[in-house]
Amino acid sequence: MSENNNLSNFSKELLAYRTEVINIADSETENSRIFLNHGPDHAAIVCTEIFKRTKKTVNIYSRQMSGMYSTNPDYLYAFKELLKNDVKVNILVDNSDSLESNKSEFLKKIKNIELIDKIKFKKATPDFREDLSNLFVDKKLHYFTIADNKMFRLEKHDSPYAAFICFNNENVSAKVLSIYDKYFNQLERVNPYVN
Image 1 (tube, rainbow, N blue to C red):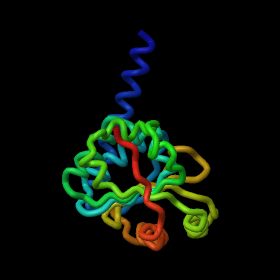
Image 2 (cartoon, rainbow, N blue to C red; image 1 turned 45 degrees about the horizontal axis):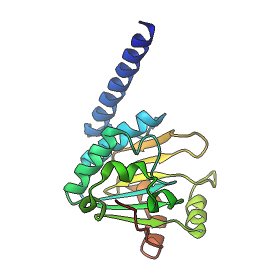
Image 3 (cartoon, one colour; image 1 turned 90 degrees about the vertical axis):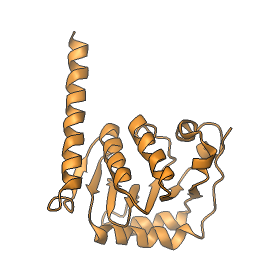
């Protein structure tokens, strides 16, 4: 009974967090506020809500697109819907090994070659990582999702899955994308494994 109670409280907490994120994203006065999230479930909720609101482009920088939140069912559903809506998706990864082999849980769960072909996967270089790190006060690497040049989830370097979130801040997005865009077109393309 205690285990069910913990699960129920956990679910209530996630529902409350999802409601808070939706309210912030939908509010014209609050959507430019930067707030924090912690943990893979919060990360999945935030990215899901970003994807639902994206009209044109999503740029992702990830270690390898195989973490706990990138394989979350809600995240994957929203991601697939994004692709069906012809949103341009660019994904830059540090480690492309899982994408190029049969090890990527993210690709296994998408599994639709037509959708995967709509994603541009590229591999980050040391120069990109250095330039991106230099952008931040702490001079550390930060992974991110940025959509429509204004919505973002920007991970904190020192705390796994903790991130700064905002649904309407073009200034922060533009600074990060200035580095991302500078490199993306010239970087090596990754051909994902799909069976």
